Image (cartoon, rainbow, N blue to C red; front, top):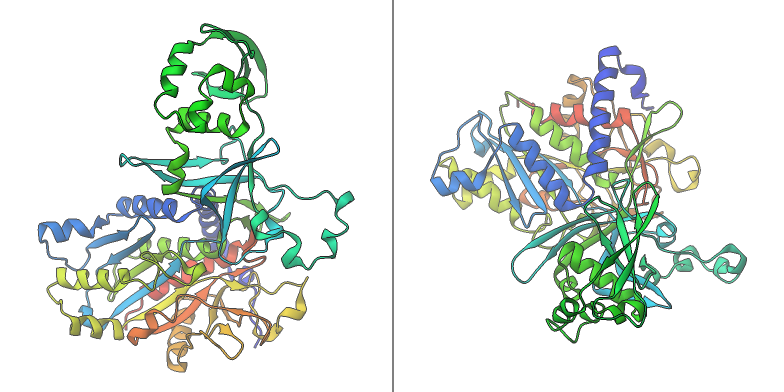
Length: 526
């Protein structure tokens, strides 16, 4: 059986709809790159579509009714949206489940150090990556810093055109003889994935006009010494001038924490002869109110800087970071928000930590999913453990995760008859896993037949696939976790080239067919 090109099935109206969806998806990829950002965006989208926080119902003792729409979150990193249908909950839910974490580099808790005049942040990679793919790329910092006083500082540096970016260096080819002899897994050691964040020992400040100023002092600065300022605007233009700094104020600031490198850099003499690290710490304090020990309670993620882009002369593809699994998270969320009159209650589950085993309080293996469903049933007057188990056992789920696209550059890793191809629609993986299907959820034949009927009735273009050749590798999804309740689950998603690379490739038409398929699944009547 040969799957068809989804492009050849679209009429003019559908092509226009596909382009509109693609534009929205590209904007989503560009704006929301980490779990916290995606959850915040999902909340905003949900509220605009009439969804209300489930906590409000619980707090006020309100009863949920058919047509009501609610959402619940946990740890700012996972969210569940529920649209209550007309059928009793014991008949089960229609569930879309995707993950919103992606492979990346996480900044360590004690990260900042200086090495021969270059300041760096030490990182620990998250998920499965090829280390050599992450060097010499413009990188951005996303995340939060939680301070002891309870404030939360949001960080996003490297995405705006006026922002600085960061980078990991690589050895020049002229000296790389020994490096080039190493296997790919050893070319860049994981401990060498340190991002360069500075190289000047001078203080840098931001002026009211948005320009940045280097503050240069002489080593014999007096208490009212003149400071030479070089202004750097976003356009690269320079202007010079002088400003006066009060030595007593600097000394007074230094007494707040005399043992820190940060406060050592607050004095004029330290600025002229201090370290790059000290200057950066002063910049972080003045710009963000962050001190060095605040890194202990920070979640900072290093991701490729820059926007998602259309790819190819024909603009048929999308090149972006994080399409595993934002491609499925976005289309699942969009389908959930767009359904109207439904019979079975529809759930969209967006969870964290899939790339490292779905562990933790925000992963699919946590109690968040089960607890939220229990709260929904309690708010509908049908709570209780037995009712919960019955409802989950009667549910149907699409585990929405991307599939490895057949890559003509590496044909030996795929078995073409059972591979996913770009441009051929939504992909269904009856099973995943490794070797002898280890770690897999293997969907039943009856459920696969049901899925075929739903997709065919909705004229969704779809294909089936395995994850590469037998014994070539393998991988898993969240599917096996909800399957433990006895519900029917099958993996479904979008074909991706260069999966887990900093920049991944998808087809616009596959994104569109996934949206159509997910929406049809939620609208199923029986």
